[in-house]
Length: 401
Ligand code: PLP
Image 1 (tube, protein in one colour):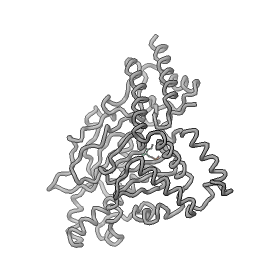
Image 2 (spheres, helix red, strand yellow):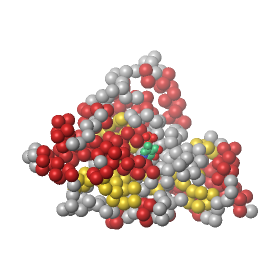
Image 3 (cartoon, helix red, strand yellow):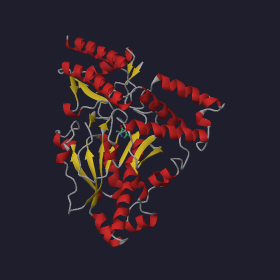
Image 4 (cartoon, protein in one colour):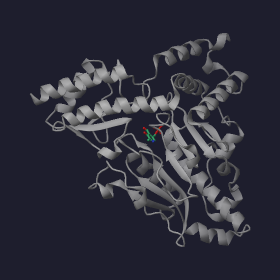
């Protein structure tokens, strides 16, 4: 079976075999890994190893911390505004010598900046508006505005309507690096003015290419696509955000929302991600995947492989462009989620069914948009892609005959 679903995604067989053995009896302790205490030395080893592997893979510079959380990517849609507004307000408070009124005045004109490129960034933006108020969120770019009312493009960073000096201040600049449903991906880190707090959702493309972490205030990713199983979210966060936060009294005085304790980043780091019971089995699986990535050439190798696999598929879709209509514009096509429509009555259903008959599963597009989506995550092998492209070609020939 080759599974091209968008997440949860398939995992390397060797990883699953090792994890299965550990679930029964971890390191000959007679207990499975999911049965050991999350506060045991053994769990601590898992956390440490996984953190170190992540840091090695992404070459995380000094001054950043790794947090493991639950609640998926969606929970970060809420956690980000809570923590980043609190950090911003504390900085302003300090600059204003703890003058609440002066801080309030600056806060009133401060905004979180959101770039909308698809369903996930839109959801994140909607949640930020709900938590901190519409007036504190500025949509600085909306792909629909430059693409005839549809997703499928990424407005160039030079065109973003950033909060202007003199008019207000930027609290953070948020974008989604790869829109899983809509198949668009940033080609690199967008150029924003120095000093911006850039926050990126990398849920569906983390560990698929090198990233200059130093450009970010925060990167987060749900684990279940490129790294592991559902139930774990990985955060890489700059330490100043953890160190500088309003206390509850200050937040109340400033009219800012108090984060639920499980979303309060400083509490989580102060407890080594163990403020409550962390699913160590999930961390262990991520650690195994990361170990394998390190052994097979790291992110350079992953990037080359992802490019090769995606190029093969797109080349074929372009070859039969009268039949296959790739959803996004060429320049922003995702390497991870290849989204297209098939022209012709009933052909998409036929394509999915034919795939299933050949052991090529998970080809159906997201329920909100339909169409076809091929997810090309790290665990997809070149052989699986070859099997898929052979099927696409066969399908195209018979459909156009
Ligand atoms: N962000 C992106 C880019 C996603 O693809 C997803 C889920 O597919 C989410 C956020 C939401 O993640 P979760 O379902 O883990 O909450």
